[in-house]
Each structure stands twice: as structure tokens, then as C-alpha cells.
Amino acid sequence: MAIKIALVTGASRGIGAATAVKLAQQGCDVVVNYLSRAEAAHAIVRQIESLGRHAIAVQADVSDYAQVHQMIETTVRELGGLQILVNNAGYSSHAGIEQLSLDEWRRMIAVTLDGAFYCAKLAVPHLRAAGWGRIINICSLRALTGSAHSPHYATAKAGLIGLTKSLALELGPYNITVNAVAPGYTDTEMNRKSLAERGDQIRASIPLKRIATPEEIAAVIAFLCSEEAGYITGETIGVTGGLYMR
Ligand SMILES: NC(=O)c1ccc[n+]([C@@H]2O[C@H](COP(=O)([O-])OP(=O)(O)OC[C@H]3O[C@@H](n4cnc5c(N)ncnc54)[C@H](OP(=O)(O)O)[C@@H]3O)[C@@H](O)[C@H]2O)c1
Image 1: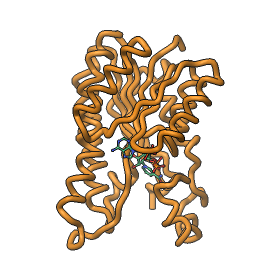
Image 2: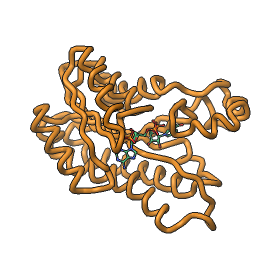
Image 3: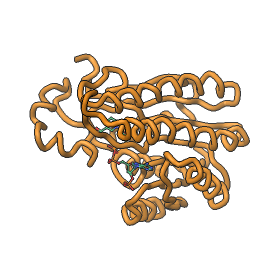
């Protein structure tokens, strides 16, 4: 495809990093957003530059509107526009309803839902100006199944599906598609502890009998960002190795 400018939040590692590299392979210039791991983000920038594409690393906490505003301004100033937004930044934490603190509930909603809303709100004028756009929200299988030990995570991720459908309806007339990707267990730092503790049990529960690589999730995200996916909007695409059927 023609060169497009993409912003991937939480791209210093895991699914976001694999997505940033995949989009660069697909011909995009990429903004690599990160929260705290500057060195990891700069390593992804160097990997993208070695592919012959432009990239910059931008630190911003997506739950902070002023920081997101600054990040979008930097994106447009340094790379010349914005056409693709991947709302990937996120984290997980575990607590049942009685243990879950008010602060943790609010932090999860702030990073997951406020973050995606802020990024989309500030990116859309640039996507509209380009006359073409893609927004991908990374939710989770837990958005569809619920979670007995992370109600805040499952609820925030389910909210992203509502945002996805609403923006797809509103932005379709502007040639902007909006979709969600719902990964299952993926081999990243986010769930390294659970995989170390009960990896065999988790693998046994998955019809494909293995954990996804970040690259397998990134491939689906990158497809949804491509010209070829131009007639797909408002969808939530599960990439779960079949776990959704269990
Ligand atoms: N791994 C899985 O099994 C799985 C399954 C379903 C859904 N997902 C979803 O997929 C997405 C990526 O997960 P992952 O497994 O790749 O996670 P990961 O390896 O833990 O990476 C998380 C990324 O998000 C960034 N981040 C965290 N909080 C942020 C904030 N407030 N502002 C900006 N960036 C922030 C981190 O930046 P720093 O490196 O700078 O800290 C890092 O780049 C998440 O939304 C997650 O919920 C993952």
C-alpha cells in the first residue's frame, strides 16, 4: 500500500511492538508509543528504520489527555499526518470484586477506555483530513467471556467493543474503518506469570494446544489496517486458537 502513518500505543514490547514492525513491513511510518521503557521503544524504532521506514518513539501515558494531545501533535509534526491508530496500550491485574480497590478499578478504566477514547478523539480529525483511516482497538477474549478474577479488565475491554461499533457507525462515511481484535493467550510479559505457573493447563484448554505469538496477533491487526480490509468495519475479530468455543 502507499505509505501510511501509523500510531501504535504500547509499542515498546509484546503485541504492540510486533504490530509496529509488521506495519512498517507493510509500508507504514510508525510512531512507537510507550509508557516507561524508553530503551525498548528505541530498539523497535531502530528495527523499523532498518526496514527503510521512518519511526519515532513517543512517551505518553494514554490515560492522560494532555499527554495524548502532545503525542498526536508530535506525530503530525514529525511524520506529516496520521491515518492508522492502533489502541493497544494496556495492562492486566487480578482481583475479585471484594478485593478490587476503587483506585485499581479507575486505573483500569482510565488506561483502557479513557486511553482509547482520548487517542481516537484526537486522531480522528487527522484521519478525516486524509480521507482514509483505520482504527483498531485491542480488546481481549475476556471482553466476550467475562473474567472471574479480573472484572475490571473484562469490563473495560468489553467497553472497547461498544466504542468500536459506535465509531464504525459514525466514521464509515469518512472512509474510516474501526475494528477490534480480541487476542487469547499470547506469549508476552503481560501473562508470563500465569503461563509460568499453569502454562500446561492453559495450553491443554486451547483447541490449538499452544499460546499465540505476538506476531500472530500483529498479522491480524496489520491486515485490518490494510487496503484489502476496506470493507470490514465494526467487527471484533477473535484470535484465540479456538479458545472462544470452550
Ligand atoms: N498477552 C495476552 O495474552 C493478551 C491477551 C488479550 C489481550 N491482550 C491485550 O493486548 C494489548 C497488548 O498486550 P501485551 O500482552 O503485548 O502487553 P505487554 O507486553 O505487557 O505490553 C504492554 C504495553 O503497553 C504499554 N503501556 C502500559 N500502560 C500504558 C499507558 N498507560 N500508556 C501508554 N502505554 C502503556 C507498555 O509500555 P512500557 O513498556 O513502556 O511499560 C507496553 O508497551 C493489551 O491491551 C492487552 O490487554 C493481551
